[in-house]
Length: 213
Image (cartoon, rainbow, N blue to C red; front, side, top):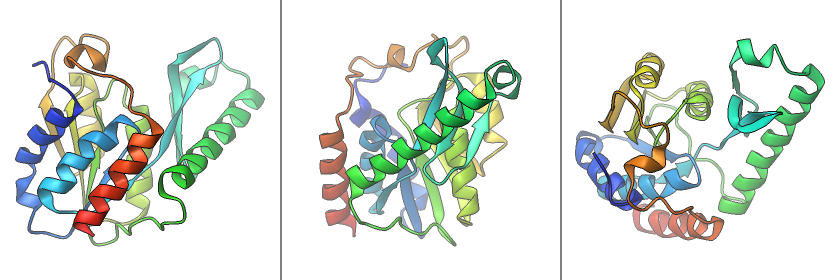
């Protein structure tokens, strides 16, 4: 399955999530691309849109290779086998640096707006696709600490092994495609996978929450 863009991905996911339109729910997106997808879901379900910000910690010699992920509130998920091979001091510093960057992004995207409470709500966690799943896994850990009634992970595409692992961590996994074999990059499943800018994220959050409260 090839998607036109993130907007179409969100629209298609929203169709699969309509059962949550009449329940108390909040859509939590992972910026930046996940916000475009999440906005379509939040608008269709008439739910508020918030963020869970998780940052990848890349390998010191290969930054694109994620070895851990940390959220703005310090929840950490790591590939223990690989992390054991890197300098512990460097790792601790990099985790803190990425956590501070996550905090900075919340302030940038949402200014002084407080996070929307998840307790007792259905938390719908959204991204524009998943490869290894470390950042999403960190986001799930943080959401669990907020005590939602249920966590639904909604993504357009992810590999089968990642889907199997993440499905065990959430109450429900909703995906448009779980290909086997996986093509190696999320962008391979989109015709348009242009980077989402910080300015777009700010505008989308403002517009969606003005409509949906």
